[in-house]
Amino acid sequence: MLNIFKKHIEKFAQVSDAEFEEIKKYFDTKRATKKENLLEAGQICRHHYFVLTGLLRKFYINEKGNEQTTEFAIETWWLTDNFAYERQVPTEFYIQAIEQSTILYISQDNQEKLLRAFPIMERYFRFVYQRAYAAAQKRIKFLFSFSKEEFYFQAVKNHPEFVQRVPQYLIASYLGFTPEYLSEIRKRLIS
Amino acid sequence: MLNIFKKHIEKFAQVSDAEFEEIKKYFDTKRATKKENLLEAGQICRHHYFVLTGLLRKFYINEKGNEQTTEFAIETWWLTDNFAYERQVPTEFYIQAIEQSTILYISQDNQEKLLRAFPIMERYFRFVYQRAYAAAQKRIKFLFSFSKEEFYFQAVKNHPEFVQRVPQYLIASYLGFTPEYLSEIRKRLIS
Image (cartoon, rainbow over all chains, first blue to last red; front, top):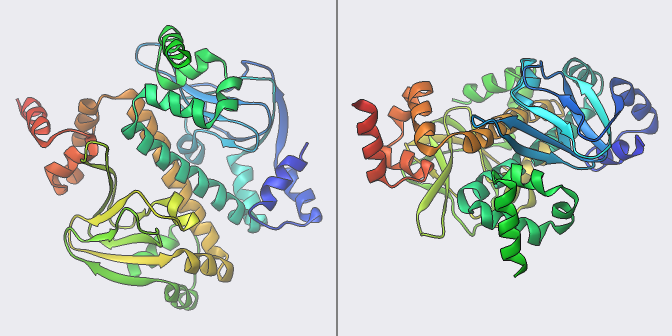
């Protein structure tokens, strides 16, 4: 299972088998059941999560009391509340398993120790953050450019397997729709 | 002037004076006049820009033909279209100096050479991207949570010096308002 992580590192940085044996000691793994919360609002954000198998989402409770999903993470994606994680302060977010998932995770303290002991991992995380930042910049442009309806149509067109996999009420939570409104749009899309 | 960059590196990574003398050879500097475009839509995004003095903005032309500003960069901020920069493909964005500015910049090719020659710079850029990503995540939450009016009120409250410094029509371009609508809101704020 950890081979998934090793392969992901090797996309960006070269580590030997011996090095990887040491690197993996800084991490833990856990199985999360469907709907299990790995992180809850008000808790110190202690961990950075890497999805080995399964699917996570990040959300917060908005002023209307609804769950606003802001991100999803599939296999080989990292997820945390980066601001709260770096500063080790309480988060406003929840991180929840959508499916039964296997998660690799590391504490902020261990991540810093790992980076000091294996500077090659600076290169790995530099790429991880660089790509994540580029994706977030693209997302911000999307949020300015497209209505939520257009955003949904784009997602169906460009990532059909993802839209299939995520329950509809969570797609609605990501788009800021009511589930009823999403049903309406889907009917329009089919007709 | 380059001391501003050296101090910024030292926030995250330790480099000796001798190392910095080598590191700085990978960069160029230029003075940009007010309203000068460093990058234009359709061009290959060749450079990563670091503001030594002055102020930049990034924008694109939306489907209505209006300039939608998506980011500002003040002193010690990095700015580029990260997606197009990493892949060396044409951008949809413009990067423009709002004030007369002094800019340090590096090509994608040189940045990669620098990181290979000085792995300590992996640590520096890892922090740069990590912080930028955390800020983008916060911004996405803001875009979901606040109306554009609330966003403006928050900006006036939390970053008054920034709101003072940036011309009102560019604040309007960032918020997706017409300048006239921004005037209206400002009147409401004062009364």
